[in-house]
Image (cartoon, rainbow, N blue to C red; front, side, top):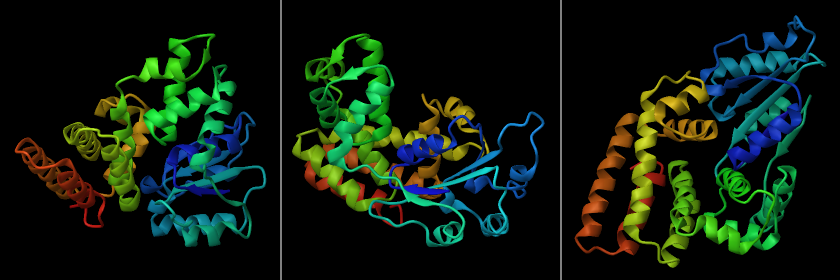
Length: 306
């Protein structure tokens, strides 16, 4: 199966749903060594079903594509192969992968429209043993934005803060009051993910909400520091170890930040750091948010990375 979409958290959740109780071997596409598909045809010592989960498939090297082509020509019917790829906003499935999988397996887009976010949050809360009312879910989206991973983590925070309670708008605002900066996470994801149209829209939303430019810049600087840390660590480091080494709280952050860091060379990240310093100096010298911040975001999210 080939799963693709704009949201890496949703794509991964869909992959885990496909795998069910099966524990896969997980491989980051950029770390493909060769021979990974051989595991799918090797009988397990304990008789459990074999599975291979490959993430960030846009980074698959040519030799990996050749190996996958050989495997799907005669796949093991008892094994599971799940390929995942995240694309830019309004992007399409990588054509080579779709063409490879379509004759023998399912190619499925994983997506969630903004209008469906509230229902998704309500249903997800129920599956987690919480009771979040629709007005509470709507308030979460209003405060935190559309980042599904951040929204999922917010549900966990609400469950810990208000166990056994029906969670509506008032409790959500009580828990997340003053955390408008979390909406900057979405801006950073889009900007460092090279999604220029999405980054511009996210910035416009923040500025229209009268969020201060220096607060937004602080969020960008924080993400940049994290990406520099991730970029400096070994590519093959497992997500859990990467999170600990880079000082991140969650494995999903490590996976996401690694994917973002790969879009920039170290030199480009250093150049972005210089742009952030210049933007900070300009804002503190009286330049307006609506002039400084769009230029910075465009420089980050543009094709050259600065």
